[in-house]
Image (cartoon, rainbow, N blue to C red; front, side):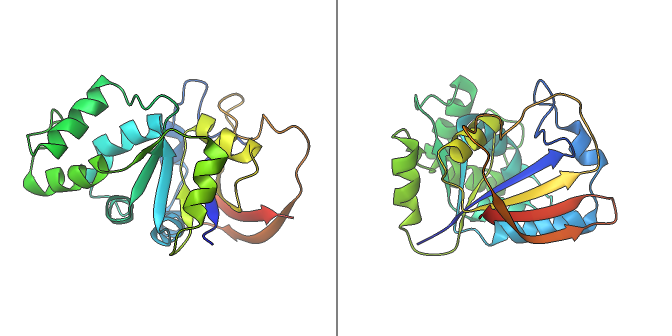
Length: 211
């Protein structure tokens, strides 16, 4: 059975985004070793899962990105969770164009980028009960399932007790207010620390498992 790893970057006061989802603080508080750790986590996945809002951002960005995170994000299969199945008009236009081999409405229309977008566009959209769908995915073969945000999707996974491992990259910044992911727990949940790695920037990678 595949385990589900929730990979999130967060501030030292446990927010994964600013009040309006701002992420600019992430890019000012990382370093090369922290990026290497993140690449290793996402490269071990046999499947990436995410909420619909995160998918909208990722299909627009990763196919054209040259960042070190791009190959595992583009090459490994994805699945999208959406209660309504509605990914938004702009994202649906990108998906429809990719499936029909038409130029994307996005800026970069090179053949290589469009081929990657077509892979993203083939990602299944899962609309069923979250726990049922996750447990079905866990029955598959291969490496772990790596879950990405957004915050609402992460909260749902945590509240339902579906996360087998938390891979948290804690950045050396406090936001004061923002988007939490542990706020909907009905009761405290004990965790066991599997590893902790400190990086030159002051960021700390913490891997926890339910105790």
